[in-house]
Every structure is written in structure tokens, then in C-alpha cells.
Length: 270
Image (cartoon, rainbow, N blue to C red; front, side, top):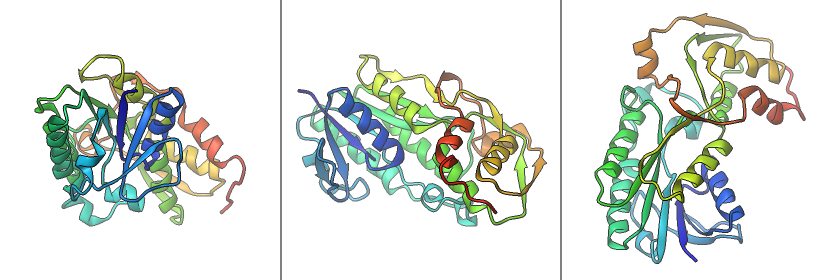
């Protein structure tokens, strides 16, 4: 049976991808810095940032789904001044370059790279790092695919949770269409095995929604009492921050429905 290696498989998106693959009957190997407890996959201990264990992880692999990334904003759930100055590249650039080179040596049939919608106009250092890694994939001699996705609901939830202590939330009126990782995973797995290579349709959520409205739905779902201050943002500034509406396929799960699933059992009142 053909073997699929997933990098980033222990993250939010990666777990959904692995669930889809296993559910569809694929033989899955998961690259991680330490072995996990999941018994329905092979575990390969390795690190994209250092290259440790990568060659062994790629042995007999037919398809690679590269969902690994290192975003300081996502890890901490908030933005700091340093995020406007620099972002680590060891995973997304050097790690991607190393992985591509080893995939060529191992004659991997298909390399699918997960990226972000709107990178060409985005100005944040993390976006520039992601774009540099994506360009390495596009220049590769491998049979590659690139799937760009909009920001994920779980990350927005994490960021808004970090603002919950503020009595007033200044929020742009710019619209975008974030998406749930479950819908992105469905699209990625379909693209990995349909025999089509190159730039694939990007994926966003089903609803175009302003950031202010999205924050309002979050506030209401959590039962918070906060005032939202809508603020205008130029189109150029919005695109620089990555706030765009994707052009491609649309996921099915709306933000409001995701919030209901997340907060319907235990609602925090503040």
C-alpha cells in the first residue's frame, strides 16, 4: 500500500488531515519531534528545523503532505511588536528546502504543500517567510501541489480570547472568509490523490464576514459584555495584514456554527 508522510500532523490542521487519511484507508506515517500515542499511524521521530530523522521518515514514501509551520502568533495566540519585525524561518524555509531535496532523492511521487491565501500582498514577516517556502516548492523538480487556505477558526478564537479582558474591542470592518480546519483537511486530502498537480484551488470559509462582526459573534457566544468599536481600514492595509476574501472552493462550516459547537456546553460569563 502507498505510504503518505504528513508533517505538522500533530497540529490542529494536521490532526484533521491524518483523521481523513486514516478514515479513507491510507497508510500514514506522521513526522513529529516525539512519538505520540496514536496507534493507527506510523510514527517517525524527526525535526524539520534541524533535519534530524528526515531521511528515515521518507523511506518508501509515495506522497508527502507538508502541513508543518512555525507561527509565533499562532503558538501564543496573540500579536506582539516583534511579529512586525521578524519571524523564524527554520521550519518554513530551511526546513522546506531540506525536505524537498530529500524528497527528490527518495523519488517521492507527489509533494503537497499547505500555504496561506493572500501571501503575495501580505507584509507581515511570517507571511514573507511562508511565501519564501512556497516559492521553493514551486521551483522544485518534484511533482508538487500548493493549496492555500484562509485563517483558521481556532486561531481566531485563541486571539480573541486573549483580548477578552479588554472592555472595548477596536475591530476593523474589513471582510474576509476564515475557515475551519476540518474543511481544509477535506480539500487537501482530495487534492493529494486526484492525480492533478500544480497550483490548486485555494480554500476559505462559506461566509464573507467583517472582522468586527466576527468579533461580535464571538463575544455573544461567550456571553461577554464588551463594546466593539468598528474601525475603517484601507484595502491596501487590509491586504498587507492578510485580510482578503479567497477565490476558490468554500468550506461548509460557518463561524457561528463553529462557535456554537465550541461554547454551547459551558458558556463563560463575564
